[in-house]
Length: 198
Image 1 (cartoon, helix red, strand yellow):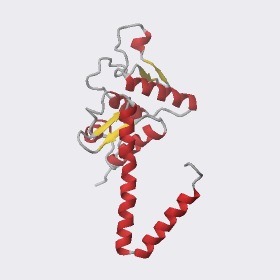
Image 2: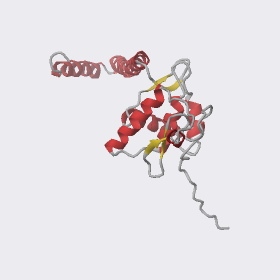
Image 3: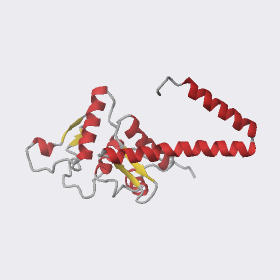
Image 4: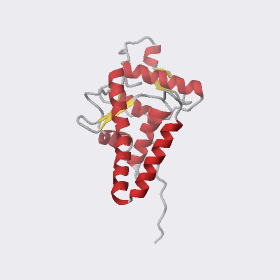
């Protein structure tokens, strides 16, 4: 018996309806991706029809996508859909990771979590969106629209590598004391190399 190979389409959908959105064209963002990958104003707004005012997160996404276009960076449709979903969330009601995985990464049969983290990192590093996250309760992701909220996320994000380096040093000190001393020496050398006032 001959087994035929099947081609599986792993292309993510271009538009996933956002639950609770009034505008089915843009998901209440006020913008959408055009056929050529360009970002354009929602046709409902262009026609002068009734449309809800985009929220603060939607305005940040609008600015970020237009910046991408100006820089000549193509807008990734999957990242756009995830950003749209995050625009409807807040620090008090973040989007749970599993919900995002199920809704936007169901097409990824392998390494769904890795693909998800890649999109979140793309939104932060390329789009320059303030995508905040929290592992504590309530856990999940959202777009920070206020400085205090973003500062709290930065504090949490900074503490993770510091804790990890502290743990590495403690483990080295307990098991490989000479290596731990070398790590301390390199740390102080690195501090001395910093310019004054840094």
